[in-house]
Amino acid sequence: MNQLNLNEQILAQISSAAKVIRSGGIVAFPTETVYGLGANAFDAIAVAKIFELKGRPKFDPLIVHIADLSDIKLLSFSDDSRIYQLAEIFWPGPLTIVVPKSTVVPDIVTSGLQTVGIRIPKNEIALELIKKSGCPIAAPSANKFGKISPTTAQHVKKYFPKIDFILDGGKTEVGIESTIIKLNTKGFEILRHGVITKEEIESIIPYYSEGKNDVISAPGMIKSHYSPNKPFYILNEELKNKIDRSKAGLISFSGTDTEGFQKVIYLSPKSERSLGQDLSEAAANLFGAMHQLEESDVEIIVAEPVPEKGIGIAIMDRLKKAAYQSQSAIHKNKFLE
Ligand code: AMP
Ligand code: MG
Image (cartoon, rainbow, N blue to C red):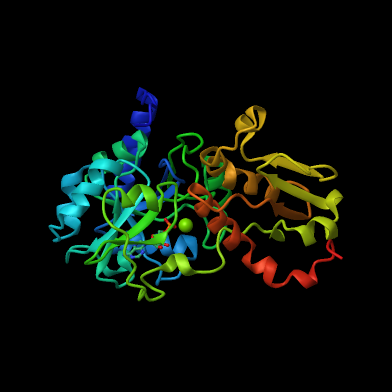
């Protein structure tokens, strides 16, 4: 559990934020993954405001955050024991489980799907907010649609300077969004990769892909996402030689071949010193590094790929989506020749 000591000041802020939620407003709050933009999950009008604020397409459903396992009964009529098996191991934590929804969950929350994604976040501020609000909180990440996810309250302010309420819980610990799984008759399939890996989940229930998810039930399939407002590429051998390093910011994992870049940000500085490579640390620093280079004076951002195994799969998923638009128009960049 997040060992934040909730002092009186933050508790008072959470009480005020809970009032905002209860009266149909929007609150940005920290979770262990990224900051969320939350509303009462049972209030369709409040939830609609989230879509409007974010510029989020209505086909992209929200995750519903609860503080207590028993709240599942409000959101789903399913008595699938696997939900509880998974919850026992992974909740509170960065795993979202998609289950059949109950009738009280408004359609706008699930984009009209008959399923709802649920999780208990592992962050004391988030949990206290949900408890004090007295309702589940529907929340996507607190960024404009398609842009870099927020891992600090400052990132949230950048996107939403006028929002009703931002609870500041410092930098988020995990740093990338939750793993999302959907249960089917034979096992689970992955809709979005996160720091909880397929292998970890497979130790509880079998992996089984029905392979028939439509685009709506797997919005993780949107190819472009998490994009900085600057050209962004994943570094490969060809790019290494072409790029004008004096105009480029590098997001480095290995710490090698960093010479000549205008700016370098190390994703895993702790492990760099000990020559290990820590993918959890890299995930925690990933979006922060992207924000920092977006805000800096570099003209172009490149990221070194990380090994595509374990948590590296989730990191590469974010990098590929962030690079998608730039990579498709790579011939147009004047800093590459
Ligand atoms: P965000 O928190 O901004 O990453 O957005 C939440 C993500 O949760 C969406 O992009 C969807 O991929 C996923 N999600 C939420 N509910 C469902 C659902 N019922 N079925 C499939 N995916 C879901
Ligand atoms: Mg998001």
